[in-house]
Image 1 (cartoon, rainbow, N blue to C red):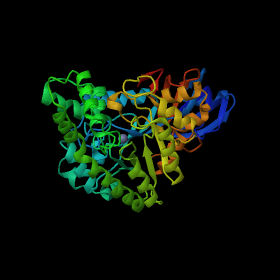
Image 2 (image 1 turned 90 degrees about the vertical axis):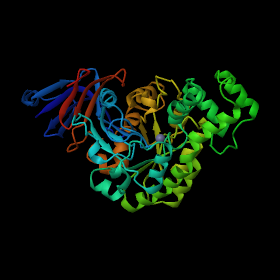
Image 3 (image 1 turned 135 degrees about the horizontal axis):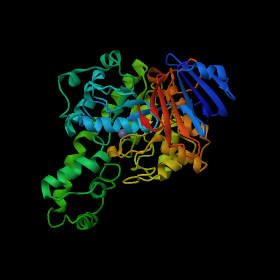
Image 4 (image 1 turned 90 degrees about the horizontal axis):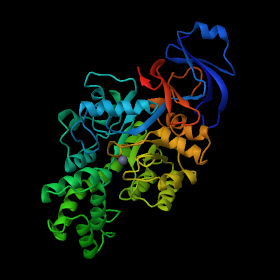
Length: 450
Ligand SMILES: [Zn+2]
């Protein structure tokens, strides 16, 4: 054997199985065998590496199917310039130390060969998705697009899938649909250019809601006096009129919105045609369109992303998820920064969805680089007795593999013959990652990347 992991408990990733004691045998990158109960000594001696998992639980490696910032190509659905090599390395390592072994970077407009174009590979199996359709590219260009060059602009979904993309999307995003990235990046940049004053993300969100409303349809936009109060509160009143702030925010947010929503139809049609799963940005401005698209394309595998988006109210998040699920969509939630960081988001919507029993998978998304790890969310669910440990772990392992067969059909479960991707976590705090094995090689040992 190459690796034997012994003396740990075992969660297989199927949502149910939990064994108090098991031994996992790994050879040639695969799970060669599993013994429930204590290990036989001769097998242990024959292994090149023995990992003692006493006090730990062995779970399948975490599969994160909605992340950003981990590839070297254009970033985000806005086709923005690539992140710095330092940021990319840091983000990848954070995911690894959070127990992730497979990661789908859903920025959507990078080429498949731009995952590692810095020449530095990484232990995590990082994959890309594709959103290369006319409207999605136009939406990117309307809000930014400075990271896009000829290959990105001319690529097709078929070419991308042939060259290694494993899913479609993310269709829409916080940049193109007036979400988080407008709050933490584009609106503050526009306000700074105009006034010389740095607006916080919270200020940007409040001004955006006051001008455009939560659904970006202006119907929920607030009265002139509310907007005046918001400008006062932000210290912007002496520097900008209400009329001008309306222009600035509308110009930052709206040009890409209609294009991005039209992109929903294009991607759903493509998903139905090619048979790959497609990830959609679900938030207040896009929920209605997403529901219509799911209904119109019953044979497309549509993943509704971050159903706990902060633009929803908790009850609304649940009723939207139930509606989408009844029509056949997969319901994903994202940790965002709502587990331990709680900078811009809290866990109210996530809790409502978990308690409502309407979550299929969990991912991190990006949250401006402040995302919390999936195991932090899983540990919280178990501690709050919302879900059993096997059911919570399945949200980030077996369930994800079932939704994304092209990316993860060979993994996500601890079963004989599956790819040997395993994470060994503390049994008291499931978010403490002690060891990680990826493709049959030790990637983290005692908390240190190797
Ligand atoms: Zn999104």
